[in-house]
Image (tube, rainbow over all chains, first blue to last red; front, top):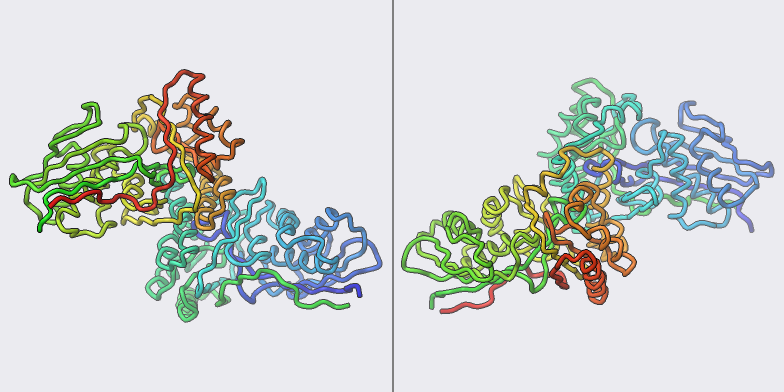
Length: 314
Length: 314
């Protein structure tokens, strides 16, 4: 029997992982978006339902990241039938947790399954990147790739796209601290210097090399020493009140390090155990209580399977 | 019985490994320096014999890299006895193959064994770095570390020193092409830009991350894609006639990539098999024959054990 409707889940992600600015992302367990895609007798790709976005997301096919991604896919495939998309947001918008990417990836996964899996999972990437061009003004892959594939993913190069899944050490946990601030992605980008010193470039290279080695060797101490971004964090963290205080508080508590998730305002904190990940969430809460800035907190393992199908209706 | 004389070997090394500019080095099998250190009744550290240097190396304790390294070690140890050093150069000077580092490392290994191994191998690093301050004007670790430890070694940070041995894929071979040119290390450094674009810094980070992942995953294709230095090579390769022609010729022959060894003029070429390493040595010979520049060629596996003791006399 032909499938009529497929629902998929795609996880939240952390991009710009510290010294992996613009090239490294990872996926979060549980937290994410759900998308259902149904066959329709009316040709074309349509968004028919959006929940959990407080009315902020567009329904227009050419503006919603789900439909942009699905449209890119069906155009590539030459599929001309009708598809209806329902989006259930589990992720806050504009948080720096890969909200637009999770929606697009879930839509792609669901559509691919609905149409009989014409694509390998990895081959869905370019359609997701196309949708990021709409959401961010640039075709980034550092949220799309980990949301689709799971784990830590290196985006070594964009043209041609070279996406490399890395090893995920056992026990690694993430705490996400989402302050209720609005940070515009293009503002976050405009505070970056356009040139960096050779010394800073070399330091950043040493740290990302150390981080990758630490992931493969499951060396938590090396991961911790390497989680140091000398390029983006110094200027971007100024935009996030409480950032420095949290950073100072979590290391003595046993966290490996922290950084700005995507272009913020969410902070991510990596810990070697679940227990420490909860402890640093309490420390973060205290810091933000003091400055009276409301936050959401998430404690999660690293998602190693990426996006997946939840339900298929025939 | 107490040892009277110990002889050690330390291998040649490639530093500034392409996108690993200033942070990554590896060691070469066979090619290297030998140093004998003997107990003497006259206190102090002395160089008593140098062979294979065509008379170019200094005998003064404070100028020869062997004696500078050994002096730093015995000062740290509080050893006040007499030590006599004999240096047998197997490496050409000023070639970019870590000649000064190999001498210092061999001297440190021999002295450590002679004095009953008061230090772990890794703890000899700071004394070697001290000797590089004399040879290069800066305390680099990217030749010293692989010469001592073998394999690919990441120098993530200098202060405090953080040296990380990486995995060496089976089958990896190196071809060294040493044109008979004199390149001054400080000239090579002066052609470097002091600032780089954020884009180039990010590209370099992506490539070193890809290279480290490729080494751990034994993924030769990924190593090849990642061997691309956008920071130092573009300006430094201009100083080496034939460089671009060799680079163009070796990739179609199956080499993974190439770069400038240290600050040149030696080129290193990495290949996935010994057969290809020999083939690219022939291609390199043809290029330099055409421009009538004499070269030395070495084809070698990656040395994974670093420096070692050859002989102990009691």
